[in-house]
Amino acid sequence: MLKEQLIAYLNKEKVQGAFLIKDLSDGETFCYNEYLKVPSASLIKMYILVEAFRRIKGGLLTLDEEIAVQKEDLVDFSVLQFLRPRIYSLEELLRLMVVYSDNTATNVLVDYFSMSSLNELMQQIGCKTSVIQRKMMDFAAAEEGRQNYTSVIDMASLLERLYQGKLLGQPFDAQMLDIMKGQADEEAMRRDLPDELIIARKSGELDALDHDIAIVYAEKRNYIYVFFSWETGDNNRGRKVLAETSRLVFDYFQDK
Image (cartoon, rainbow, N blue to C red; front, top):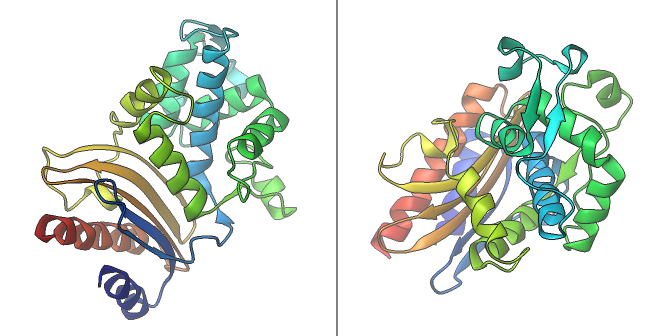
């Protein structure tokens, strides 16, 4: 069974993990530690994406909405560090946040929407183990114990409803998936899969912690891959765990 294979892999690598794998054709599901609350890293950005489209659906915003990025907004590991601070459209900031995992764009949007609104959204859509308590790169907040959290079950539920068009409904769910399909990161769960595969995904990492969530549009059947790994020692090893477990899952569904 795939579940036993994946748990054996985690044990062999001596890392901690949680996962939910689901066949979107027949509903077959394999899960482990799926309700465990884990630091979310950049996966928290998924809720910012959803909040943006919730407001667009409600007529409060458009993708053309203009949002200012100031010099003081810039943080490390950001594409925007190399671009002139200026007025960006909401769509530009969302794509920077998801496609390039840009932390400046994320923090600007956290301020724009507010943490309280994002936490309210998580509760409204039933993602009850998820919470945002700090912005990206806010190490002082992290040291004070303010961390962002999520779980495999929350992320898998979010992905499945997006896939089904049942999160915000169409065309909004399809637009969010379109942004996710542009993911620039070719490592982690994407590394060992065929280049031609269409995948809607988001990855995230902190020190010795690597997560990846994806909808894989495979030739035979589409499936959800949600895999968290931590206590990996370093991020190179964490990305290796994601790559190799992702290949195990892909091969399983190819042979099914």
